[in-house]
Length: 207
Image (cartoon, rainbow, N blue to C red; front, side, top):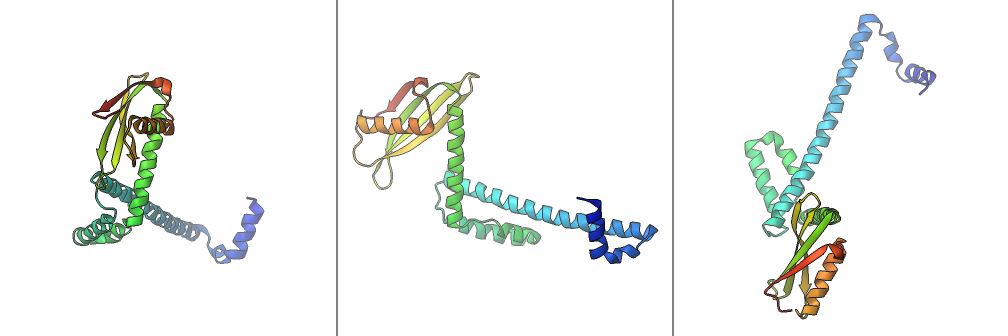
């Protein structure tokens, strides 16, 4: 920015400050600096509050998913939080109220967390030297067969990773072919290299 442009802007838009000189000018500069810092701090606090509200929303959504609760429970949880905040710390009530826990928000948060876990697992599988999978079959509330595929892998630093690789619905039959296709799809979807797979274990499955 050129000095001429700055001077011209100052003389055109801020002529009232031209009358300040000496100590009076220094005091005015300090006053305006204090006001500027206060404004910056306000926006910084507002941004921090917004970030904390988003983090809290993700944390609650994760708990809802871990405990198998209904997504709509987020709205009830928020009502509880608002009541507690209104009694324990009324000055923070607005911050608690800014935490979004609607059903749609909880669904989106859980989807984001799931995608993040899959991404982390995919990154880890690239570093595996050896790995194995374990398959177990169960049925859900609608009596549909669900194949749980667990993964265990180790890298060259002997760091062991154990994680649920996939949950596959077997809607028709549960033959060995169906199970093999489900495992194959899960391995390919994760980007796991077949030459790293050293073992497959089934738990009472009829292959």
